[in-house]
Length: 98
Image (tube, rainbow, N blue to C red):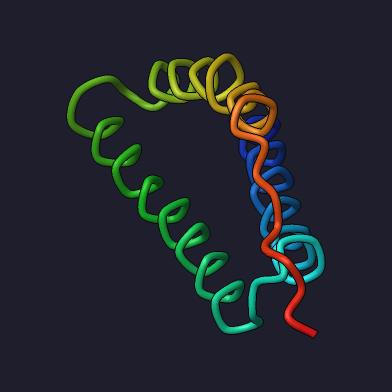
């Protein structure tokens, strides 16, 4: 269960990070430096939350319960929230400056 949860989490996170650079530069017309900064912030936050999960697991809940809780939260809240925000906010790129 742990290996499957971690594999799915890594594939999702790295898939978002790789495609986010292309989306920000090509679709949203963000500069390369700012797109790289956004992706770096996303990846840094993702990895820092692993430390928080490790602390919670070691101090309070135990590893299996922590993985079960955070996997359920990510599957039920975080993953559907991304398309929902795109539908509600309708981000649009700034006009091209060429």
